[in-house]
Amino acid sequence: KLYLFIFNFFLGLFLALSFEPFNVPFLSVLVIGIFFLTNEFSFKNFQGHYRVFFYNGLFFGFGFFLFSMYWVSNSVLEYDRKLFYIVPLILISLPLCLSVFFGVMQLVNAFLWSKENSKIFYFSSVWVIFEFLRSILFTGLPWSLVGYSWSWSLSYSQSVSIFGVYGLGLLTVFCSACAFNYFIKKNKFYLLFALAILILLYIYGVQRINNNQIIYSENE
Image 1 (tube, rainbow, N blue to C red):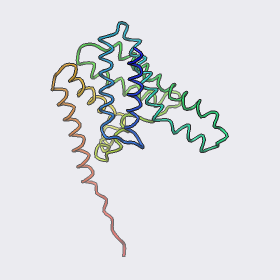
Image 2 (cartoon, rainbow, N blue to C red):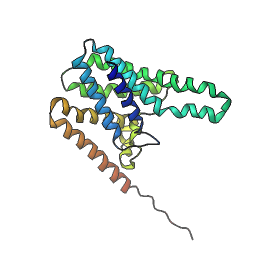
Image 3 (tube, rainbow, N blue to C red):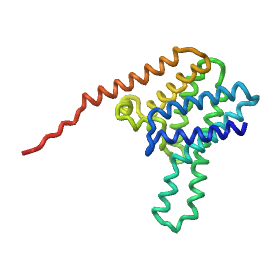
């Protein structure tokens, strides 16, 4: 089981590359899809998969927040270098606390997981629900939401005007789960459905940009 937890830790690290300042295109779709497959693997191969699901989420979340939130500890040094001794505490404790959201999210997934395709909808919905909870509980920390992983593309980012950042996040996770469910069920329908959504989001973004061009003029 340890190998699976370590794998999910590195998977979380890779998800952080989807965000600023790295902005690797489509990486969030790939990583979340693989994370979806690790749930299926855990469900099929481990008795008492609830505990495995929880630790998968905990390690995944820790890797993700460790890499995406490292700048918080750097900001302390910028404020006062004499506070260097608390940097390791912030660097480890903040990601560890935030990773609990992923752990509990995975517990919910563990209870809902099944052999049916319905897990696609549960997985997507639960992910975004816990992103929202993370944004409001304990004063809230709405950073590194999946919807922000599209900041590399002005066209895809336009979808926020309709769905909001949580809605775009929901579509991202849903498309990831749909696409990678192909490796479980070998059914092309969900794969093609995911591709259709991504294409439509791009077309909408392009049209919105073209219809709202900024025209500059020089005043004489």
